[in-house]
Length: 262
Image (cartoon, rainbow, N blue to C red; front, side):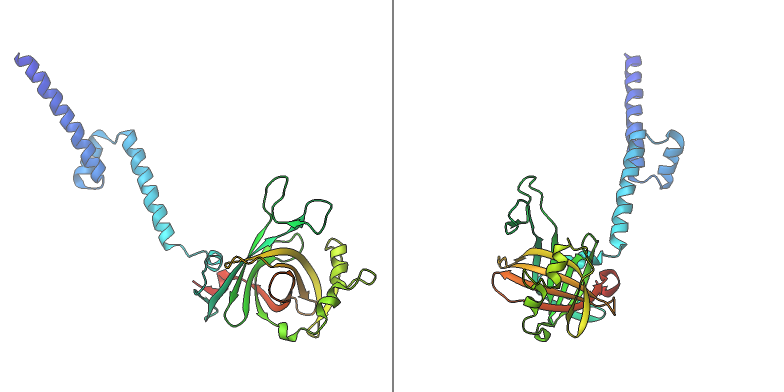
């Protein structure tokens, strides 16, 4: 009987020691006792793996906490009423719009859609942010087939001459500069005049402008670049349906990472 009790005692002592090892090493391997236990028995593989995963999570949380914010995302997710500090100047979000790119997918060029009826895939969507002071932040292509860039524009519709829309379109017999640019699949070197300057046509985009109020005006947007000052850009928004009017904007490319104080 005594032998059985002795064996049982030894088993219980061994189990208790294992529990102590697990408790000590799990709590703090860097303590004096933790180091002693680690030197004597080592660390079970499953505990080493768990500790490594825990350390990786801690490091990831730390890096996330000290990382600089993505200022493109700061600009993109702002809400109406928020303030954005651009080069030390506070600007308030007045309105947010999402430009839904349109194309025609059949023979009927007037049947333009944002969603491909065959695949169900959506076309590009561009954020448009109206700021205080009649300014516009717009992430859009720099030209046909070119990458996206942010642009910062100022409203210049008051400087638009009467008949400007008709001048850009022209007629079927005598097409205007933007009609010629469109007919070339946006490949021709076409210029147009506005604000006593000459601009090179760079892109034409049809879009439904989805507002937070639920309105969906349809527009054609024409982007041009100053032929004498390649830092200056012009954006003409030709309203095709819905409430509003044609508008003219002049500005430059905008780099949130360098120009926004988040």
